[in-house]
Length: 147
Image (cartoon, rainbow, N blue to C red; front, top):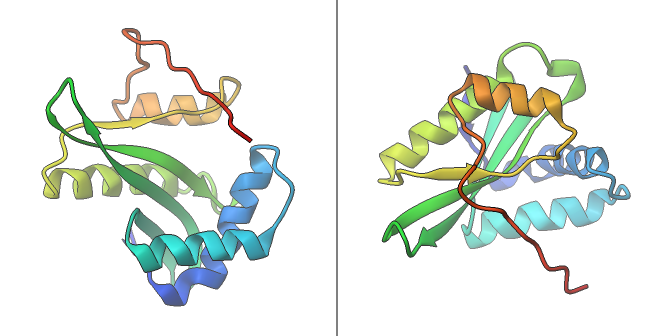
């Protein structure tokens, strides 16, 4: 599976994928903001971005954010984004990106990954569960919007 770390040269193509991902989650399309956001992540190095590169055409990405768990006294990563272009789905790319994320985390000494997905996103839930991810039954997760 041709999965690699994203590079600054990927900003244009990765920005298009990120924009499509945001539209999927009900946000208005804003390709310029998506490209800026990706360029910032890559420039600051504050996220791990892996891409599926099919002979120079990016087909999908996974983005992970480093966090810490006080209870575990250890680092953990938030798998914040996983997206595969609609025309490239059903080819194992999402599965490959999930595995690459887990492999990278393990190589970096991270022993816990977490993610959230839409309650109605059954396709994603099925993929995650088929890869060994388990729904959290110990904690309710809450959010506070400050905008």
